[in-house]
Length: 331
Image (cartoon, rainbow, N blue to C red):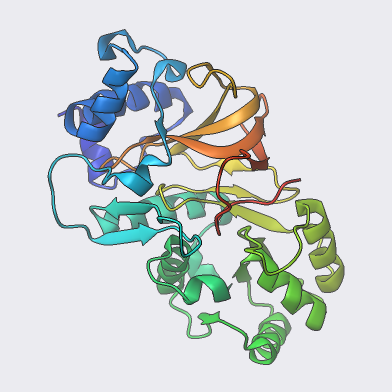
């Protein structure tokens, strides 16, 4: 087994960096072609010869819709530590991501979080996720649980509609000068901010997208402007994650996302899905090296722009795509 593959499986992700990313991604491609029957069949259907794949833009990316119709895993293992399910209408088949090793998921999440925000132990983690708490197997809920567990602070917790209680706790934490992360689904943050304006000087507010028909669709700028005004903040942070991925990207302002070390984004031409580039506008393809037991190369339904420095923004979704809870707002 390739040494890079072995290190990823063991959750030792610190060796992944910009200089090594391409070589590791190519090793993961060959590994998953050999062990993932769905991905191998998809690659073969495109008449792509693995030995001819030498660059990131030559790797085939599995359409995200396969997670609705197939069990996308490496090998024949039957047990999954976790199963993440996407949200959707009652008539829509949810996507299912079978996570072989929860320790690898947690290693990826925490490694990425520390890159952007430092140690979770320094924060009180609060999650305002009503629509996600009301259903099972939401990856966002599990993400928050892991961060709360790592924080270890008694004040951490989830909130549905207990706005008064959340307001009082935030005021106490602010008075104590305690660093706090308020993670919230967009419509809930808007409703809470409208009802409870207050100055937040020690709190990071992070929206995860998703209006889910609870409000009229707002642009990200509209959302961030209201939240900044109500809470006297200079910036609103954002998180980009998907049911089908293990890694996240974060934006510290204005919806400009930066990938963690295990993740990279490319764009594909809307008229030619095999035409990929690392800069420009198009549909977003994501490389997630931590997703070693499933598929690390996902063609999403998100539309975006990728800048020369690798940062990206999401500008909407392809017209034929069903709107999902984790989809991000158009800007």
